[in-house]
Amino acid sequence: MRIISGSHKGRRITAPKKLPVRPTTDMAKEGIFNILKNRYYLEDLRVLDLFSGTGNISFEMASRGVQGITAVDQHAGCTKFIHNTAQEFDFDISVIKSDVFKFLERTKAQYDLIFADPPYDMPLEKFEQIPALIFENNLLAPEGLLIVEHSPQTNLENLPFFQENRKYGSNVFSFFEAIT
Image (cartoon, rainbow, N blue to C red; front, side, top):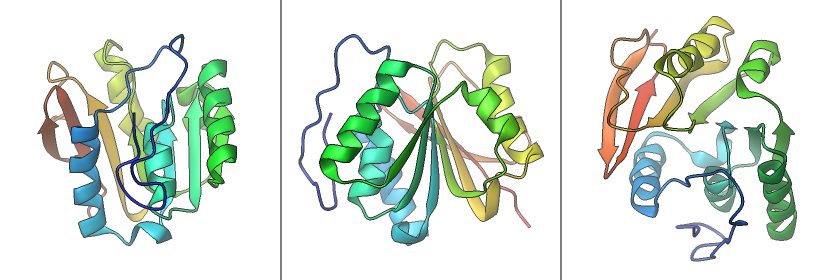
């Protein structure tokens, strides 16, 4: 895993092999960040990284100047790795060890960008719960964006607030936003 752009461009990050993760590929990450940089001034975003795993997306955001990043994962090894790496790189990432669904039910914060990368084998009902909880609890700021990463076998197109899909190799990103 490597950071593609920003202050730590080209820096390789090696996560412990025992973590139960599947980091977003560089090709997919580059595609998503091309979309985001054309849509937002990244430095101004408040970002929530759900199912953060190795912190791949959080580290990329921080390298590109994002200050307000919250990374949520329930695995203690993942949260410890993100915390330690963020300290090593001097990244402003708040790490929370929590079940993502419980976190979404109790948080009152709003975010400009929410990125969710759940396990690809998670049941469809749980995938559907992610945007439902985010929109029910008003967690997206006005003009905010939710991106859910999933496999091509998962279809989220019929859910409320769905806008489009982007496919990069075996990664699909579904975009959701409340259109006003």
